Length: 83
Image (cartoon, rainbow, N blue to C red; front, top):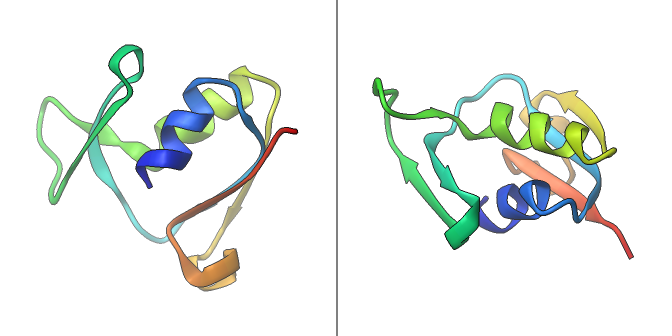
């Protein structure tokens, strides 16, 4: 999760696959390359899957929103990196 989220923020993701049927709460500090994953929503965190999707789109990536079972490897998030 951390690697893919940061890759989205740094413009290294060509295609992103995010699960629509789960939430992944936390915070991102892209400048220090820190992703803080949290168990539940709080006033100071966000859905990391949404943040990753927004960042990927801002850098020209393509985002595929799928059920978790349809994501390669069954993960909450997966990516194809730019070469």
